[in-house]
Length: 457
Image (cartoon, rainbow, N blue to C red; front, side):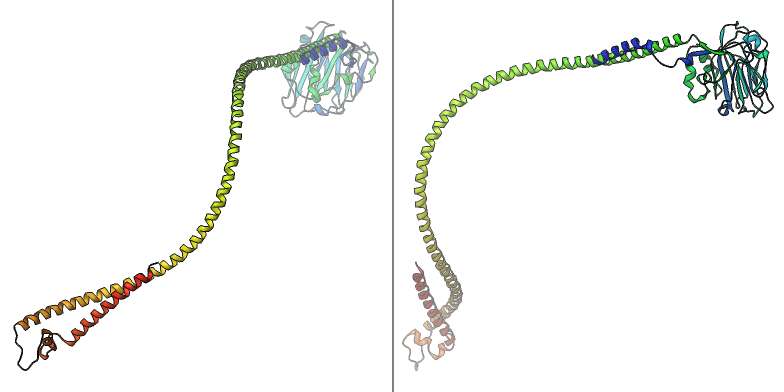
């Protein structure tokens, strides 16, 4: 609500102080010219900005009935007496020393009545146009390339027939002017119409630097004869409009502030409603949480009781653990003694392992020798089998053979060593092989038995 209150207070303050404004009101005054030749204003304005385009506009109130009541005359020292010449009855509408009469059109406005006059031109359009109360009443072409002369005299209130002088009786204006302005552009018909709608608007002041010669500057120029400032009747009207516009602006600002405040309030209301809904949900959640908390508290009480029981059990268990600890310490001492014994046993086992490894090596050597002996025995057995076969053959031969008369034979072995058979069937070589094999077999068997009994731990 703060922006709304500030807006209302600001509006009330403006309304209460607007009547005491100290703004310069002189620009709202008109000029009234007397009925004699010396009643005029003359000076040299800066006309450079108007060389290529200009518009002369003013509110005019004709009072004097004469042949050529001229309210504006501009002349340069170039042999041309009338660069611009305008009379209030429409008889003179001249630029560049050439013009035409619009007396019939302008005479339609009764004497003593305000009307708006505007004459426009530009070098590009080459057309001089005259507007009465915003309506085009005449136009004429101008010479190609012709520009407005500069460094001339501007006379307001009469016609200068020579450069800066020779004012005449029949050109006395004797009327009133208001808001005479010269613009450095050719105003469009729409701009002229807007300007002619109301004498008491300030639309001319919106043109900025384009308004090259300003009414408020003319009011400050030196006056000759009887040229006085009078109220134009626009001060109250403009003040009322300004107050109305200001009030309207303040009201619009206030309305914007109120709308903004309403939008803020609506937004706040929406936020508050959303917050209330959230609070309701939060309340419901809190009630659920409270019920859950109460249930949790009951469970905690039960848990507390259980924990107390557990504590008692734990204390009993701790006592048991202390006893167990003592037992474990005793067991540890026993285990350390056992470990020492095991270390000794381990050392003995290593020694036994070394002995076993040596025995195993010897066994492997013996097995290799046995394998060799076995191979020899197999060879001997084959040889013996061969001998047995041969002996069998000898036996059979002996059985079928009789000894010679000169031979001493007492047994079959004697026969075996006889000359006839010893060198033939049973040779000395075979007998030596048989003898060595039997001896070797007996030696190996005795050695094996001795080694086996010696290595038994």
